[in-house]
Length: 148
Ligand SMILES: NC(=O)c1ccc[n+]([C@@H]2O[C@H](COP(=O)([O-])OP(=O)(O)OC[C@H]3O[C@@H](n4cnc5c(N)ncnc54)[C@H](OP(=O)(O)O)[C@@H]3O)[C@@H](O)[C@H]2O)c1
Image (cartoon, rainbow, N blue to C red; front, side, top):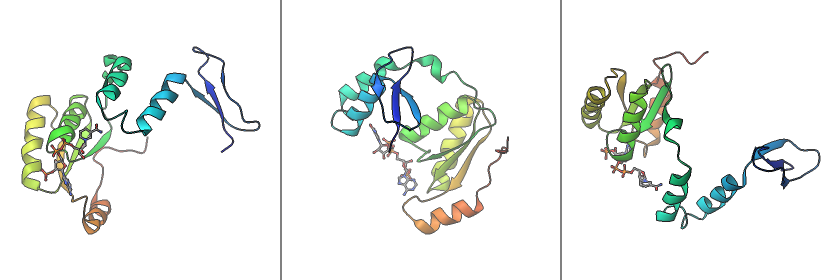
């Protein structure tokens, strides 16, 4: 509560003002996107895709993820596998969190082959099972240091 929302200077000086609060830069499109996304109906349909696609910049994805640990649930198929492949292609240390080690290892092998990144690992985890989640959190150790 009590925040100042201000458009980024490059776009406009207009914004919401609440005295004595923190200043948070925003732009109108981001605000409108946030509101439309919250409706779900106008976000998960084709219009949501088109709205976000119009602002998509491919160069934003041209980053090195070397030295980053990335954990991907559902990483052995579908969107999770595609995301894991994209992360591995950018040099991340990738962990596929899968309920089936066999399906996970199969996907990890494919991702290593497709990206040339050997640092794709499989961890067993059933996200519908609290005991499994707790056990994973206790045993998981990132491969690359996160201290820096
Ligand atoms: N926001 C959107 O517009 C949008 C669009 C499409 C999809 N989605 C969502 O994105 C998610 C993935 O979609 P998808 O099409 O990629 O589905 P998918 O191909 O069926 O992949 C689902 C993945 O989740 C894993 N999984 C399921 N239950 C699990 C559990 N209890 N513990 C660990 N892993 C589990 C599956 O592993 P197994 O191989 O072991 O089954 C599989 O790897 C879904 O939740 C879907 O609703 C969102």
